[in-house]
Image 1: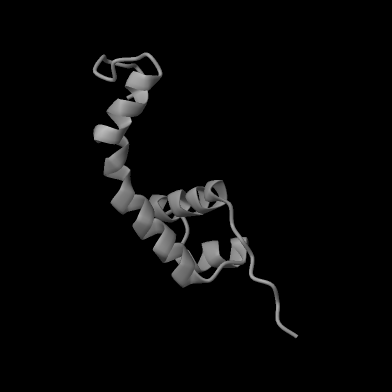
Image 2: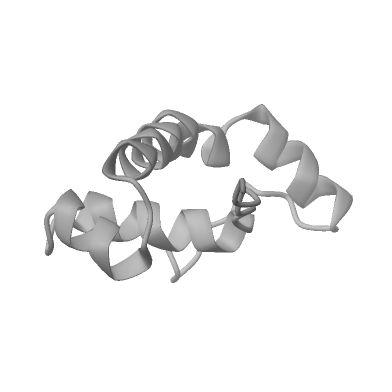
Length: 78
C-alpha cells in the first residue's frame, strides 16, 4: 500500500531552511529531527538563499507602499 505524500507548510519549510543556513546542526541531523530527506532540506535552503534578495527588491517596495509606508526610511529592526 502506498503512503500518502506529506505536504509541508511554507512556515515549516522556512523554519527548517533557516536552521540549515545557520549551520548549528548538520543537514543529516536536521533531517533526522524533522523526518525529512536531507536532499529536501538542501532544496529548501537553496530556495531560501536564492529568494532572500527579493525581500529587498522592487516587489518589497510595492508591498510596503500599498501598506502606507515608504519603504525608504530607516528602521531599528534592520
